[in-house]
Amino acid sequence: MPCCLPTFQPGDMLSPMGGKQILVVARDDARAAEIAEPLRAAGHQVATETGPESVATGIHSSELDVIAIDLGLAGADRSALARALVPPEAEVPPDPLEDVERRHILATLTYTGGNKRRAAQLLGIARSTLIQKVRKYDLMAQGRAGDAPATAD
Image 1: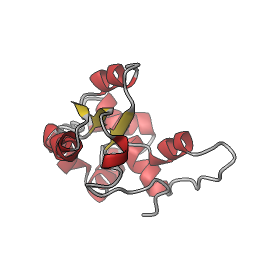
Image 2 (image 1 turned 180 degrees about the horizontal axis):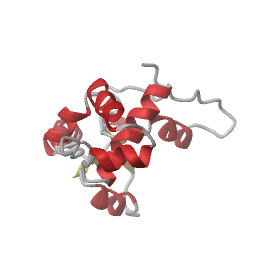
Image 3 (image 1 turned 30 degrees about the vertical axis):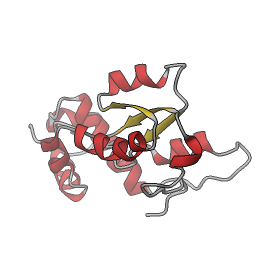
Image 4 (image 1 turned 180 degrees about the vertical axis):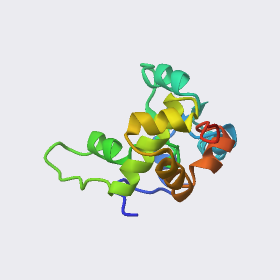
């Protein structure tokens, strides 16, 4: 999948940032620790967040120098992130329809607490179609991991 955001490997840009206040936003504690470890080793003060409520609070901290977002985070809107990070005059290609559909289904399942019948009603599709799409986008596995309770009916 094409992405318009730069991809960094551990060690990239760590030294030039020396001593920064960094917030790492990731899908779970293990992934947050994996991202934060090389940053701490480079001498930065790193905070990690995984819950949407605490992330909102952390992002608005005036002391932050850098926010590192795990693009594997369920529901991460890469297109919106790209638009926020590039100059307004730059062209940002739209996300593929499958990416948008996946995020929207995940958000709807999260909103309904995993209730597929209710989610299908809100989406305006049959429950069987929703179940098919949940399988297609592997949202059941994410529900078991705690990202969205997508396994309940």
